[in-house]
Image (tube, rainbow, N blue to C red):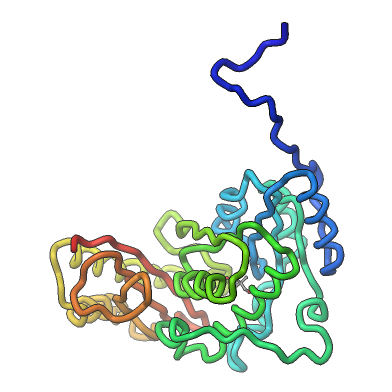
Length: 301
Ligand code: PAF
């Protein structure tokens, strides 16, 4: 008689995944691979990225380990403003494919512009008021570009689940809203921020920092901790707390603050009384590099 695991009544073997990772560039190729995986009973997970992959992205690939994992790598022009860093954004496709392979991804989708923005294209997905706060006023059109490309990626890949990082807290919330509002048939998973040993949030833009800027960039994380300490000690005045955060950043005369805010984590609105789930978020400019970071705190009601 064949041995049978004790207490396991299921005789169904889980579908096995492909051993080799493919890299494809067209919508037709990605659809064919996804259809083949789905026909083998696999769940399809999408990890949308702009490349320059780091440990934060790897944590997203890892979180999707039970699914057929599609990593898209596309530096989306429509989410960059005219004075932003689109041209110098790191493009490291060979290294990124090696990272994906090592992390166990099944498919890399690295489309050409014409796959995402076909000739004559003119349609955009415009988010609502969630996009008007925090990063919104400093990056006009950014979240429209994000929603547009993410909606297209969802339509092309047709995943069951898509993974995003909590570092882009506002983006995550806006995408969740878009999925509900446009009745998109997938789940959104938000994964925790991955940090360097000193606490700096992992970001593709960290590569732009000079050693001096890198050392100073940690002040944003320190400012978040100052807010967190004040809040957990019972601080209830958002203005006083953000002033204390500003004082931390002001130790570095040449670092510019875009915003430091304490908002309701569910809707990004300012809070009358600080209770429940709150988001402490900030964006600073260190040299030419814009960095964002945040913490979520659950305060007693
Ligand atoms: O978070 C990012 O890297 C990008 O905004 C995304 C979601 C891949 C869309 O281009």
